[in-house]
Length: 90
Picture 1 (tube, one colour):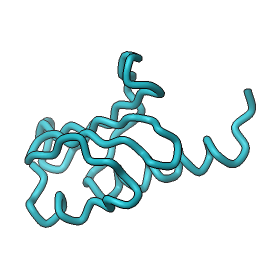
Picture 2: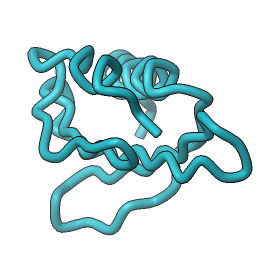
Picture 3: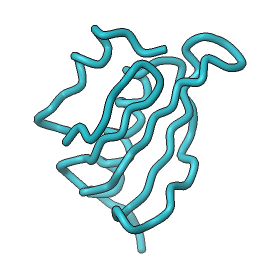
Picture 4: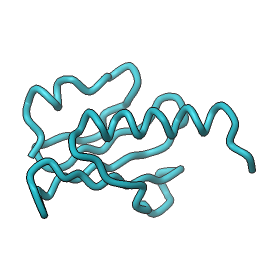
């Protein structure tokens, strides 16, 4: 479950926050326009987040990875953005 403090710490200059509650966060990166959905089912253990990603609003999500915390998930997203903007080979 995401705490109120974690949710408040989302960088609203970096992300457009679409929805955020104790189990789900949906954001759009202002850098790439990509959409991210972070789900915290607390299974198999507390703090286990699943990160989903899509390139456009009309696309389906695909699983991007996992993180132990919302902060780690955000770092993973920012790392992906950096890779996307600075050297992705098509």
